[in-house]
Image (cartoon, rainbow, N blue to C red; front, side, top):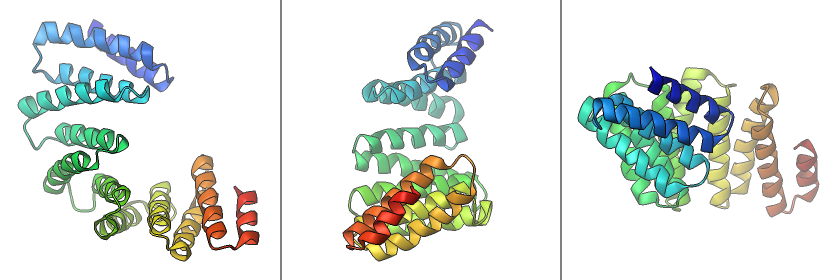
Length: 238
């Protein structure tokens, strides 16, 4: 009960963005659980996973990855290789490596996530859109546009199917496809996708940052096309 309280308090401090406080509490929960139940226990894995997330938020990537890897090792052994928590751990590690620019390693973890979710979740489950999106972005940042596009399109397809044409998730997919085409230098297409995203974010409360990001990138596209008046108008909308 004490360890669970420490863990719950850690999550509360995480929510308040007080990550150093959260880390201290997660460490206390981990030590109690590990002493009581051993390393290979789901509770111990959860504590390591939470530590990994908190370290990521303060930019301590090596500590983050170390803790996430321990969580994954425990979950694989205790829960089996096809469990949802194993997929979640792989997804988190993939994202960590991608943010560090280690895209090949990230793809290995995303591939394991895709395998688990594709075999254990219903077709068109939202999690499949999430890993498709991350996979596409990962290839995009490597400059592998041929492999990136089908994943980004698949994420959009699933999100439209699950959440409709005007959801935040669908808007994110339009935005990512806009990034894809602008990185390729296809600014006209990028503008089309950014406009789709902007139309969605305009209608949604709490989407201010997404809206700002979309209009900012629209402005860049117009500037690169030397359509300065359109770029100025877009900047004012942002």
